[in-house]
Length: 169
Image (cartoon, rainbow, N blue to C red; front, side, top):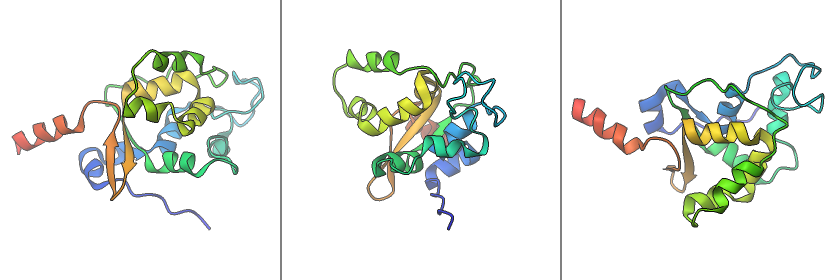
């Protein structure tokens, strides 16, 4: 049986329409898809998001993944900035040392704690530095909270956009 797709939160849908998607959908849309043969891929035939073709989701989500990681992929919503450049340097073989170092020098905060949690570490290992940095730099990320609310952890504050829209109404 197919899984029911989570609905985009109403406020995000009203503001961004189809640009608001789950984290998993956004990642799959951003990664350049190569033919299903891995021969020309940077992963050198090990299989990755880029060369897995229609089965790319099985690289991102695996049967033994923890439930909080799965919830991150389906419950976190993402809006890619209209000014975002294309993802030019996707390297599935890239490690995650550079990204980790960025966060080790910062003081602890709820956002840093979230982004350094095990579920984000799994995501980083699957998508690599370039895609993770792209997500943090060029998207607005909205994490689920209780009662169908979301907490924005990156991107231009949605409250600024709402104020602009209300001023023009």
